[in-house]
Image 1 (tube, rainbow, N blue to C red):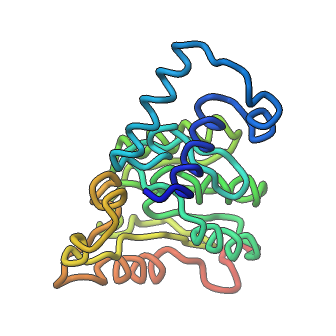
Image 2 (image 1 turned 180 degrees about the horizontal axis):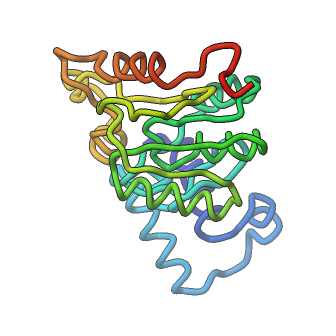
Length: 221
């Protein structure tokens, strides 16, 4: 790691795990920390320097101005995914489906930003859904979480105004060229697709859209 990157990670560890704000580190720069605190933060810093994502080390990631719990069972929320949420929040949706919810950052953000909407979120991973449910509870968001395979056939009778997703799209052959922090630590099932079927989730989403999206005008009107 570069010195600049190392400083950023140190700050994140101090803020997220140590509870020391940037202002604290300036005002109390001469404060001596308790030995057990030093040992804990030093151990976390070593994990980051060994290649583990700092968000997994601290157990949290920032998204849309909120703090979300994360674990190796879920992708770390990306800033570009905030653009997806920002676009979705402009839609007058009363029912929303998030496919492949992971940490639940998209579903929870939409539930909080569209308080009148019913939000449902799918994921195949039970561990990911556990993280997503914890985030919804911590942030006070009403989301219905369902363990479901996005590649399976749509259920009869379901319908939504809006479907959002950040699906896997990285080809397996690209894995070797990716940053270690991503390729070796984030969940492969949420990242990679076979080289010979790179669009499998996009086709599935198109199928879900044809089957589950309300047409305009809405049948409920």
